[in-house]
Length: 396
Picture 1: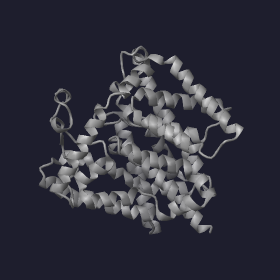
Picture 2: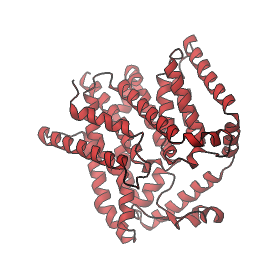
Picture 3: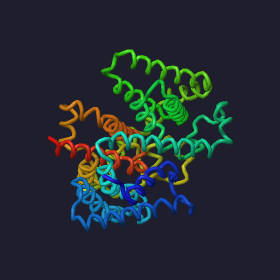
Picture 4: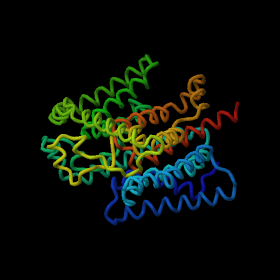
């Protein structure tokens, strides 16, 4: 099926995710372009929905989830003295899940190889992000190399968006050891994952690589793994000081302690409002979840996030909101059955299924689920998986 103008505009919007600010504050070209672009896409897509009278089954769940947040959860936030601005700031990222519908329509037009096409588009988006980060921080790269800056994340907020991990996983799945651009991309993404300083990203990339090659024992696969190992060894030799600093930081468990305290606090708040939660935007007191010395460095007494998706929704939206959230983000029963029983289907969508699983796992050890970019990526991955599943059902 031929792509139309709105489809190309949607693809362009996905590519802009790599340069959209992590936390839009100032009025810049990027902060204006992004909401305008997505508003045009949603307006055009709404017109198509009205014309056809049809929406995807998951879109109905997303609408129900967002209505719950905008009405019932808003009342919970007001009841618990959360400001309107704080509630809205917590709400905005999840509003972008509605992009699922135009993304579903887009992927349905891409033909039988839609999964591979979207995977390549996401790799390109990650590459745009990588170039943007490196160019913007070119002047401080020497400080990063000599260890003056422990993590690039300290100097660049865009490093909090895990595009490096996304690029790594999808490049591994489409990796060819004899393809020089593929090797360069893998090396670039691995480097940025390492300098981000997040051991969870490294662990998830390693787990994805092991899963990818779980059944392959031929010479071609061994050669691929050898070349990948050479890339990692080369990066380690070139940036050995950074590796040592990063390893030293990975040995500390302060972050794990914070996350355990956050979950404990979230569960205590759930007991106060088990059904509907305390409302998005609730400030988690830093003196409860951080040490006194660390809490003193914060500009405010509380932060509106915790590093665990389930605990965050249990605290803020209660049991009802958490169930609605999982109903939105979990693949359909039919998808799971096809993935288990049909090898051809599994091979077709496995890279994106693995990416989906990696993102959901990462959302439970980070606060990246509150990023607009990640909600759009999650919606895109689900749209592709659902589209391929629908095609499989129709051809049975």
